[in-house]
Length: 559
Image (cartoon, rainbow, N blue to C red; front, side):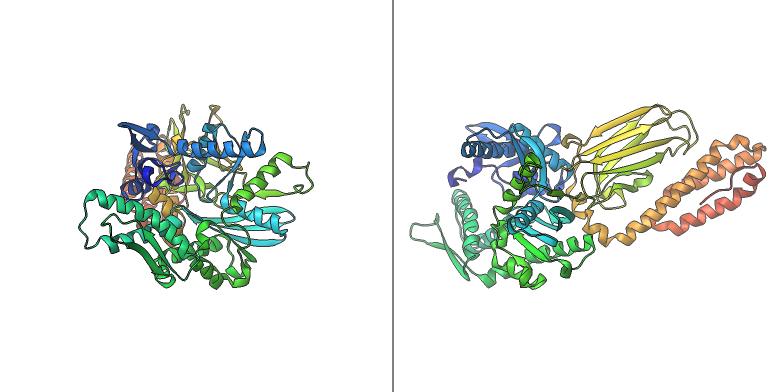
């Protein structure tokens, strides 16, 4: 990036790709001082970049920016290999959502590249390490701490089979967060009591931001560092960024504490302890910081930490190995019998009534995988079914991410629960989801492939997805218990209402109908924390109508 054209340089495309303009993270990012351009709403509610060139506004989506990077790499590779490169294996962060993966494929298409496979970055690093060092029958934790993301993956290697067991990470934690901490620290230090013009201030801040990146690199290899910044306050004034390693560690301690939390959650996801890990593979430029390696050695034990692969090249080397595997399997003895299995980072499911999440594909299932659900109508004479597809770990879909919807219309008039429909999920090796829905009596079939245009991502929901699900497990269990009881009770009431004409006495019909509707009305007013009150109301309702139902040979109410 040239200092003079920073305002015309697109950065952080990887952090924005696959996100909607209304995403809370995008909104926060747009208001920050991290970027020299504007983030605007583009077609399809996409987040896009905007710059002004010679008085003309230019808008580029993150996919278009990423495509330009891919074009450059494609051109360089073609020149090096002396042949046209047309296919690629592309690495993505382990926690990339369905929409972010789909957007990455779109960027490749814009660059005229066929995507052979999307491989997660920690998996690619593990492939490179295990194949390069001849490792087998081992359990590896890959700690991939890059500029924009932190990914932790647990991978088992046995008989040339790489099987991802668990993935965890933070798509908003990386070396750039450290750059920002340094930038804010020195900004306060140098501008606190200084009166300068806005133009000089902008020039200084631009130089400071670039200087902080270089300063961090220098501090990574020295106990203390001193880095000059070209002054714009006066001809005779010299400005230096200075800091000791201890000061740096103190300033950035929250970053490293968060990194350890992510390791803990990854181990917990798989149900193992740190003592079960045989080797820890360290990749990503941020792992050059001494504090990161010290932290890992203290946590796992120094003998487990493997730093003998290039932190910046390991992912690319692993992706290249995967590409060779896909293209030459069975024709090269060195590649024969290798197999790579990844997992889904977040659960995928549909919404049952009352916002209850029904997972069809749980998180950390090996890819490719399938899920199936048989549902039923919930109202008498229901004409259609709306199937909502979600991604996330909470049992309440309000805290998960809505991916898309399918609607089945034209259902025949029947009692609630008498019409069944089937929903099938298939998640392929690249993490792209296909959904099929089928209602047998009408023969209606619907299908879709989850794409970015259908995605409605909320950053709040994603951040709450896994950690919040763990913290609020008791709350979610109570919610699930409440909803399941409520749905079963409602189904019983609606069956009674559908069969009212089977009650011989008109007065009894009116009484039972009134009791049903009163109970249904009360149940709609109760919060899920009122499970005991709901059960009590249903018991009262049951006591009121059970004798009438028995005398008319109707089924006893089930709760």
